[in-house]
Length: 308
Image (cartoon, rainbow, N blue to C red; front, side, top):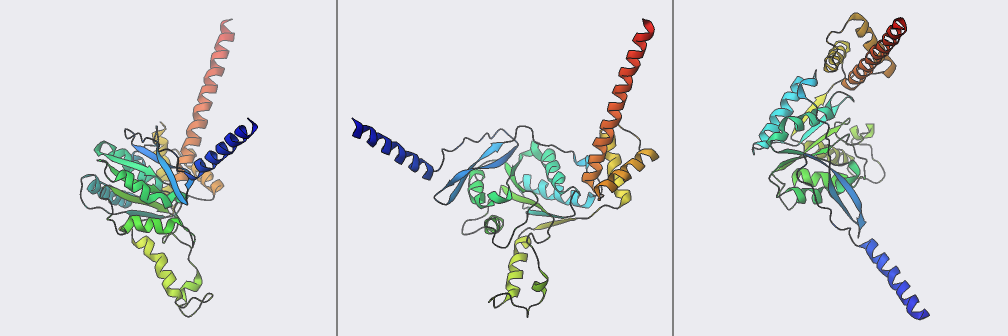
């Protein structure tokens, strides 16, 4: 009996170890959603596995709420409209200063074209090695999918680098007509660049042609057919965006006092950008709204005291 129990224990241990090597059971994708997030569910036999997790309440931004980037807005809307209409369209790389509306613009495009069958799949940088698996799940779907990679950058030996190149240009299999990649980055070429790369005669280690390394780095960004550049806001542009967001929160007019508050807010953040303008508008609208509620409560209490 004791030997039998030992045998069962060893069998259970063996099964547990085998389970760790096997890929997890596939999770059924909720295709009724408009946006998903790729979730890495583990690694088996050196291959990544995951599933598309539906986002129940995607952040839908209105295109009209995004200011000071009209040219970039027009270009990405045109490209996306071609895409959802089954026409040729390009992968898009949005690069430039932080907080200038790159990510917001991609989210706003989803809001505009969701009714036309546009869908969004957000993939973190560390999960880019699973892009081939993701595309294989989307290839035969009737919808049009944007794979969204936010704040993208790579180090020299990052494994997601080659996976992204394959999806952008295809390997032995053709790229999927119903999938595009929209990526945002603060780096124009997505990888770190060094002064030594401008000096063809300077060698690092035993590398024979250092210029080839530079070409390899540039080649990734060149696989995006549409580049959109974003620049830091000047003071007037920052104030215009702040005014737009204040209107969104019900404050119709920007007075001199509000303008000064907006500038002071940007000074504390050390930057003028759309993100800072949005944060100021939320802060100011919240503070003024709270002050009104407190004043109303005080007035109500005073009136009750007077009546008694």
